[in-house]
Image (cartoon, rainbow, N blue to C red; front, top):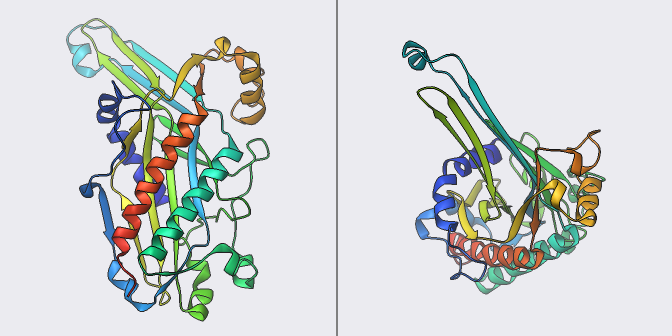
Length: 331
């Protein structure tokens, strides 16, 4: 979780640059790319101890709700200048529908794509089907499914920003609970017995970009928040453990803009009753607040699901190329 939180911090730092990149972006814009300088590889030298890699699962995480708050209060300098004490606050929360079956299909396609590319690089690949009946694999702790979402939900907080992610794996495959140890550590005895490495790929996407602004004025303070329906690959990582239990990874250093204008941000009261009902039934953050239309500060991102699927697959497969490039040819 700490690693997830750290990479989310980088996302916040890149919001301004991301917004500028996407100002004129379209879903049919030039192909998404990942510059070489955006990829970090750690401890790849450890991979020379075995020729096979186990892919136990793959996770796709997509933001389903985000909330951001901007607060401005009268500074000491303003007070000395004669300004009266005042404060300004702006809060915006946006819900994004999660098409879980579509995301599972996307996760499966990315999983199969990674396996194919690893085999092409000379690796022998063990899949979920090869180990699903192993007692060590079966006893691994998994994330609990949110009954309303139909998939696990991970929650991150970054200062005044809160984010909930729907997390999916290919149908039948696990979403491991990261717990307090590094991913895949629980498979260590299985890896030794089978003389294999293990590799888990994670792809995290934000379909909305939330921004906050605050300003100290001479006579008053202002605060504002905004959201745009732009897609970011906010975090991507291939984490491995070798047969000798040495860890390493290939990871994205910073969030990268994937596509712009993949949906429309609407006030909750302005969405169709069908969409409002689907959101209110699926998301738990509403609590006892009632219907979506009664939540004045709530917005809905009416996502073009076809564009979202296409863009996620594009970015995920390109990151798979970077994973294989980082791992190199089989020893």
